[in-house]
Image (cartoon, rainbow, N blue to C red; front, side, top):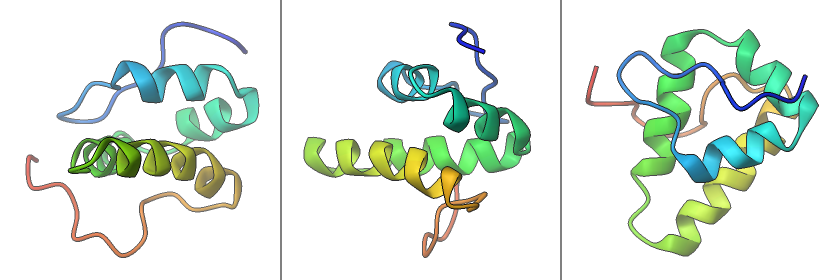
Length: 83
């Protein structure tokens, strides 16, 4: 199911670095497409909320591993303030 088009969140579009990771992993991409637009929005906002580049990279990696572990939203984060 490799595709360049993936579903976005309610408010946020998928940033390129996160899109590349998801498109490169069929299982993670399938799980991404299975969550709600609000849940995708939470993941995207959580990634974009990182202050440091290394934190952003770590969060992007966690999106993939957490989705594969059955998590549908970021853990221990207050949520997107943009919706």
